[in-house]
Structures are given as structure tokens and as C-alpha cells.
Image (tube, rainbow, N blue to C red; front, top):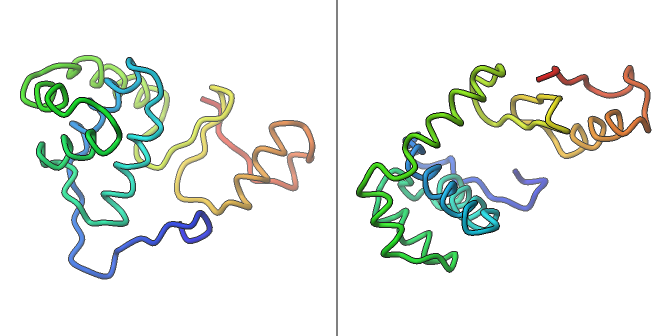
Length: 143
């Protein structure tokens, strides 16, 4: 995280929050266009700010911070909207071998699991681009 300019706040009483509802908001943001801003805000809220990303008010607030409609976010969170779609995605990725996060898939074929350094990702991408021979870079598992 530090290599990416992020300051994780793990020195205090940290918790692991259920992020399923945040994934429903990300799904909604994908339908509206680009979900990157929301994904980044959720990541920072959870790991850098210690915000409870399972709380619907917190999630709606983050959506508003990203320029999304807060009332629509609250409506999504108070109903089963996108529940099936997110559940299907989760089942798909689990069927492809993903059991935890982070998990990065390159070219829809190569899975890299676990936290990795920026230099490791550079090596992997160079290997997949054919710029480095496989023996000089970490290997990835086919998906």
C-alpha cells in the first residue's frame, strides 16, 4: 500500500466488514459508466479511514462523495436490488478458483492472488507481454 501512496490505518481496533452491499453499489456504478472512483473511495474508506463499509448510511455517503445519487444508493441498499447479479458474479469467480482478495486477473486468463509489490506486478505484466522470459518473473495461474 505504501508503494502506491496509501497509508493503511491498521494500528487501531480494525475490523473486517461485510462488503457485499458495497459490491452492489459498485455494480450500479458499472451500469452508469465508470465505477473506478467508487471502488477507490470504498477501498480508502475501509483501509485508510477505518469507516464501516457495511453500514448503509456510510455507503450512501461514499456514493454521494463520488457524485452518485444518494437517494438511489439508499434505495438500492434498502432493497434486494442487484443482489442476484452480485451473487452470480461471486459464484462465477469462485468457480474460477478465487477464494479471497486481492485477486487480479490479467487478460481474462491469468490469476494472481494475494498482496503483491508493485515490482512483482511489473514483472508479471512484462512476462505476459512476452518482454521477459517466464523464469525471471513470477508465474500466474491460468483462469
